[in-house]
Amino acid sequence: QVKVVESGGGSVQAGGSLRVSCRITGYTFSSYCVAWFRQAPGKEREGVASIGSSGVGASTKTTYADTVKGRFTISADSAKGIIYLDMENLKVDDTAMYYCAAGRLTIGKDRYQSRGDIPPASDFEFWGQGTQVTVTS
Image 1: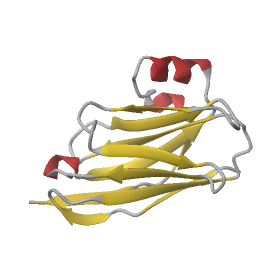
Image 2: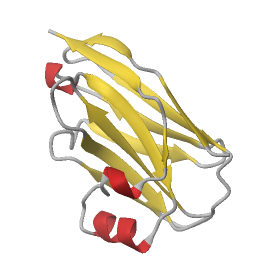
Image 3: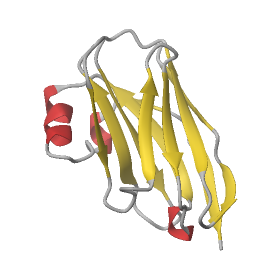
Image 4: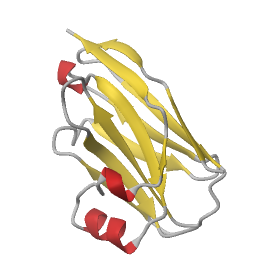
């Protein structure tokens, strides 16, 4: 059974930094695509960043939303099954519940990433419960 658990959220002042983590267990596929989504109260869920790999030893592709490019970095520790999202120069508008979503690197997800886009939420099979990030002014 695949489990996705986020951690590391919290409150930080604008301009500060924060790292959130996503631990994935029970996942047996060699390929993967993992994305961070966020949703603020009254707003639609949006993709923040994604990372994908076709298998062991293969290179990874990363994509970012325009709103976070240059400030957020997604990375993977495949051996530990953890995906990180490092967030710098945080803004009040970054305040949201952050969700981690995972699944196989399908042809569809790869096409999105090859275009520089984040695959849509509907393409991901496994989701965590979310971790809250609050940025204060």
